[in-house]
Length: 373
Image (cartoon, rainbow, N blue to C red; front, side, top):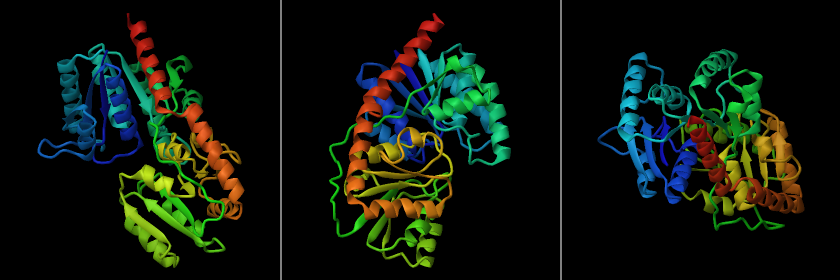
């Protein structure tokens, strides 16, 4: 089977980018012919995404006119460029990710009568998004759904949201939970660590909310903790200033964008993720893979991985005091931390492995191709 994967952004290694690269590498390892098209790429300089793809031995091409911003002129050029790209490579199936590649990629693929699968990494009309934006993207997705052979949602929450908003027929949408490749680095949680090491891994921009975490930890008593906020992004400097204003700058560390995420998680005690909206965050699965208890905002599909009082603690969106209370509870009860960490690891092994995600995704491809015969 020849598969073309399309995604918009090449300058940011977010969850969708990591998901796509892992999926493409897994499909290639099983003998499938894989080609990737990625936007925001310049002919003279490889993007971070393209560098990662090259290291993984994946064939990756830049789609110059595929940009995140809405631009009628560029979008028409992008449609023509994508159509020529697909025609030149003659895939059996096209798998599109992210909103922009999802829209134009579906149009280009269907114009060539190619089967196309669209993976949603969180709908743009989900709770937490402005009402104006929700209305616009709900309308767009209702129109665009007819151009997809199948829509994959990464959480049951997103599938139900689409059904409730009449985006597509239920039989043309399927949930395939995100999955992560195994890691040999696992956390060893101490019952009485001298310092409780907290960690959040996320880009510093919406929908992530590092500021909420900073305000929450500033209220912790006692003060035997440290916090590592891993990532970069447009709101990084703003959060550094907030840490200073809260007088916690000596206990909060900003290492920037890091590649050794598994190692950092293995050396932590508690994982935190505060968000305004989500699909199913890969960083939570990475934390569960490491055997960490998770404190997270109860948004999107998060509750499908973080089972409250079992694999971690859920806090309502924007509830700084609730975050403080949840972290304080784990700080005060070493046994709870260890038990939740073990439960998180067990749930990862049973429901969120990469092999499981790959197998289910390939089953979707085969089902779509069988229907096309």
